[in-house]
Length: 137
Image (cartoon, rainbow, N blue to C red; front, side, top):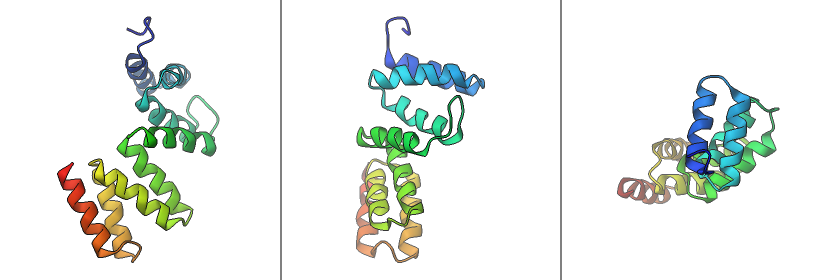
């Protein structure tokens, strides 16, 4: 399926290469899969850029790939964009990303929202709405 430019197969091959420590091949497969529109490939590329595996560490490229994946509906990516916003003290934006990720059923987003609620960043009402949406997902 890789020969036929199947983006999912390329993403899976990229993940397998990464697991085996072949970061350069992982980067090549994931880049091709991302170019063909595979959302998971964008998410995985963000980790390569975050950790400098097969590429130079690059926070801008890491965030770019996270945002592409998040916009396409990848819940983990949406959560990670929220975490990035939180680290940069953009609490309102972080909470919006966490709520979207929770609505997509991502458990980590609920945990992040709990911490934001405990810190006074999220209202009780917003947390309750996000929790109900998460449970329905």
